[in-house]
Amino acid sequence: MVDTKRKDRSPVPDLARGLAVLFMILVHLTDYFARREIYEHSVFGTISLFLGAAPAAVVFVTLMGYFIPATQKTPKALFRRGLMLFMGGIALNTARSLHFLWKIWNGTAFLSPLALIFCVDVLPFAGLALMVVALLIRFVAPNYVVYFVLSVAVACVGQYAPDTTGLDPYLQYGLAFLIGRGYAFFPLFPWLAYPLLGIAFWSLQRRWPMLASRNPRFLLASGFATVVSCFAVLPDAVTIITTDEQMDYWHPDLRMFAWCVCFTIAWFVALTFAQGWLGQAKVLRYIRWVGRNVTAFYVFQWLILWNVAPLLYRSQGTPSLLAWFVATLVASSLLTLGWRAVFQMPSQRPTASISSAK
Image (cartoon, rainbow, N blue to C red):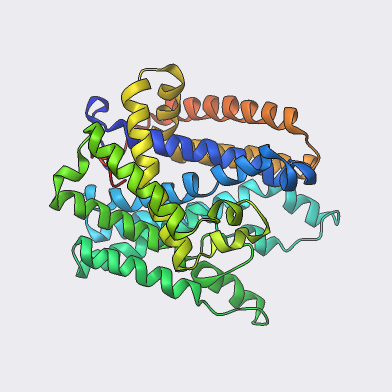
């Protein structure tokens, strides 16, 4: 993450990050606000659960990995940044859970406060992943072969993570960040595979710049090949992601990991076309703005939704969900603008094109 001039900034990664956060808001609303029948049996629920999976979290953390070597920061600086992200993630877990913690304190909710505070969400995972990668880069320079092999190895190890049920509760909370299941949505194993994959993509593009080509024929061929690969690798992936089998996505086996890789490439091909055709449309400009301010926007949407969730848990119909989606976008945008105005936050992303293997 380095300061860059806006005119030199590649728009497709910002578009991908912005969409990822918008999809996260949508799936959070479905998870915590939607009535049970909408969550389980509606088209709206199915679409939101899918969009909140591979197009959101997988794309988000793969991009994180892609930009790690592009920043050209020292391993020490990367490690320090990772530690700050991890601590910030725990702080966010606490702040977003204040309403739930209050209900636990006054005896109207029966949850473990530690499960809320030490929930393994994106920010704590990103911090841990960045610290691990910082140590790795110190000894192994980014190389697409090495990091691709490491990525697959981590995915393989993750699917054989042992069950920690029955262990000391405090030990379970610690292990959740490494191999956890249940409320641990982003344990280091197997999710570290995606940032490592991002590093491999960066190295591959440096080795063969033609992979960054925006030639329509090349993009169409790449997109078609990866879409076909998606169906060939795991034809029932969408069903798995949007049903009770969803834990097979959060804790994937090698086939689900391969499907997510193919989907990510196809997704970036699609976004490259969208940016080329509609890049000046107001809605895409707004989404890219969200992507440029992704951390602040992500934090604010969680502070809003998770503190409102105890009041509206599983009680809202589709029109109300859409209204809450718009309201959350407006509130998060205003808060992000205020944050930037007070702290004068510059853009902190490197200039890099990941038009094809992104």
